[in-house]
Image (cartoon, rainbow, N blue to C red; front, side, top):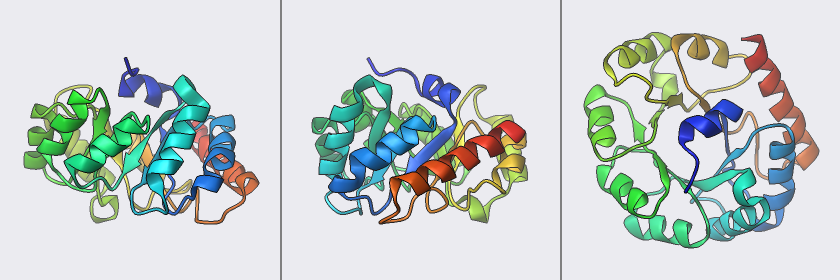
Length: 208
């Protein structure tokens, strides 16, 4: 049984979006992130050989990290990720069918949404949390309004434009976590650089 999403976010509310990661980089970059306290690792499927990267991360960390895929678009991709050991589904869009497939595979599902109608349809399908995307087109005030009508305790994670100097107002508005992409990892970054960015983000959270 995969621990609940809220349990992972309690360890650290940061989700590392490792777009462009290669299989060779997967474990060294993953170790840098987990060592800095970030234990949710998302490999978008438009990365080079993403299934192999997910397989290597899942095998290396076991229950020490929540490893999964982002930019998931089809049920076949959900099955591939599950077969590789991935336990997390993240989508850029509101597709209740993908949520249902993920849940039948025993995975945690955090689909993308932007409107209340999308949010409620995804929750009805079994979503464990919701990805507010693109967050640049919303605001902390929008998140606060959404949380006022969503079921109490639903984790909402803004994604897009999240960085050490922007997460504070979102956290104050009730964000349960944040998807962090290029401000944490860019293709080819050395693990030490990723670790330093991760620590800076963790410091920003503590300061917030």
